Length: 276
Ligand code: MF3
Ligand code: CO
Image (tube, rainbow, N blue to C red; front, side, top):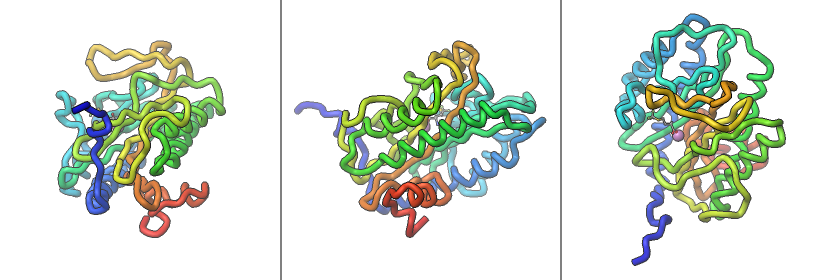
C-alpha cells in the first residue's frame, strides 16, 4: 500500500474538539494572567512558576515540560530571542519585548498558544511588529476552513506581513497539527502560494504561529540547545493559536472568545458566534 501523508492526519470528532477546548481555555486563561503579571523586575522564572500554579489549579498537565527534555512549562523569548527561550532568573527590563508560549493537556488533548507583550514603556516599532504578527496569525486562522488548501493559511499570513513592511518571516519553524500530541502533521508554513497542498477537512486541528522579526529571517540556536535567536540581533514577535476546523467554520480553541469578535468583524462564519 502506498503510504500517504494524509493518513497521518488526526481527525477529531465534535466531542473531541470539546475536550480540546478545555485545554485551550486553560492555555488562554493562563496567558491572560501571565500578561498581567509580567512587568519590569519580574523574571521569566516567576512567570513559569505562575503557569505551573495555573496548571495545578486546572488539573491540567504541561505540554512542554520534559518534551525532548525541555525544562519548563512555558517558553519565554526576550528581544532578539524568537522562540523556545527558557525561563530564567533575570528581571525583565523596561522596553523589552517578550513572547510567552504555553501548552496544556486536558484528558490527553493539547492546546498551544503564544502571545507577545511589551514590558513597561511600549516602543512604537515593537508595538507595530507585534500587531502585524498577531494580525497575520488571525488572517491564517480565518483561512482555516474546510475545502481550503493548506497553503491558503501560509499565504494569508505572509501577505499580511509583507503588506505591512520589510519584516523577516522565519522559515525553519512552522505551525503544526495538534491533538493527542502537541506536534502532529501537517506542518503549517507561514509563507507560500495559495491553492497548494492538502485540502483542509472538518476534524483537523492546527496551531498557527507566525514568527516575525524587525530584520532578517535567519536564526540560530544558542548553546542551551533551545533558544532560537535572530542572526542579525533584530527583535522578534511570536503569536500562536490552536484552531479547530469545524462544519460551522474555524473555532479558535485557545482564544477566550473562540475567535467570535475577530470572525464577526471579518465576516467569517464560526461556531464561536453562538458558543464562544
Ligand atoms: N509551542 C511551541 C511550538 O508550537 C513548542 C514549544 S517547544 C517545547 O512549537 F519543547 F518547549 F515544548
Ligand atoms: Co506550536
